[in-house]
Image (tube, rainbow, N blue to C red):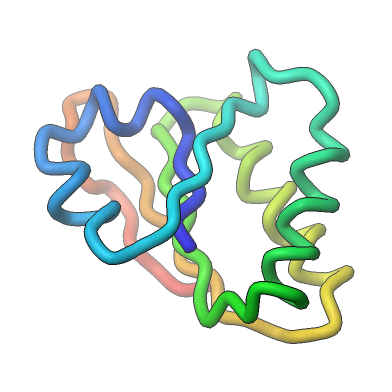
Length: 102
């Protein structure tokens, strides 16, 4: 499962080939979207019911994107199944500044 901040695809030139290929994609923006609790509940269901094996979260190197990681971590903590989470941070110049499992 790939959970991407909506701006990441515009900032990273090879986004589709490097991240989307072979994954199910969810797009979100913790700054602009309302009802963030809905995201948490849906991610819990995806982990538990859809048997997601891993979650990759792509965000930008800006403060508002950090909320997306928090949402995913909250959902993972609530889920019955445990899955590894990878965070990829895209810099404001379109480069990868962080790529790690959390």
